[in-house]
Length: 60
Image (cartoon, rainbow, N blue to C red; front, side, top):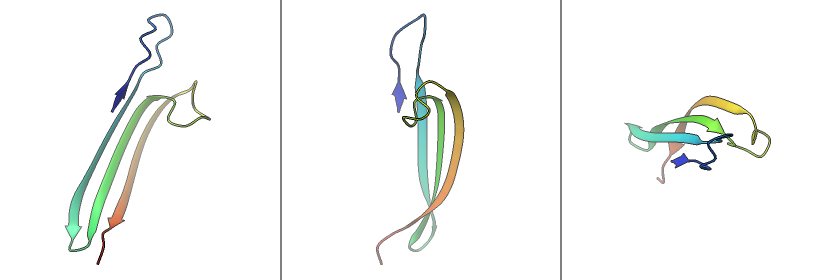
């Protein structure tokens, strides 16, 4: 996902990339990268770089 407000004097853009991949039969790995402004309402005016890692349990 890419987001931009198109204000050249105070640009507040954001980039988010997510990928999931199989680990074993019913479990997937998950990686997320976020860079920019406004990932949450608390961070709307702070620049943030974040990497998230997790697992997804699929239906049995």
